[in-house]
Length: 69
Image 1 (cartoon, rainbow, N blue to C red):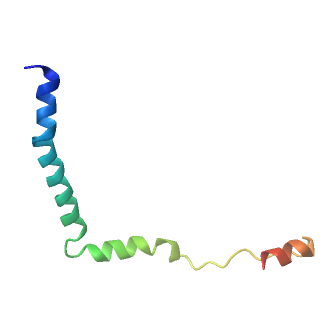
Image 2 (image 1 turned 60 degrees about the horizontal axis):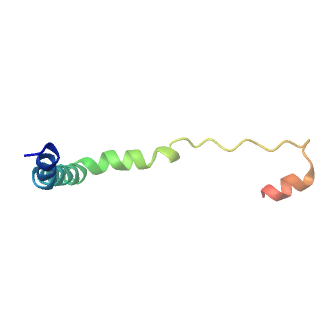
Image 3 (image 1 turned 90 degrees about the vertical axis):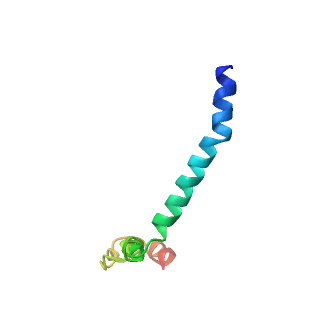
């Protein structure tokens, strides 16, 4: 049997099953109990720091200040 034919048959059968099992494993990992706390923490990363934006300096022209408002 040719090498290509052998690899093609393997990819069509066992590799398909392996990748499907990997997909199901990932889905189970994502929806496991207790994972929501970790995902909520990760989702709130942008909101952790409550620093105010830098104040505007008065030496800039007035039209730039108005454009930013």
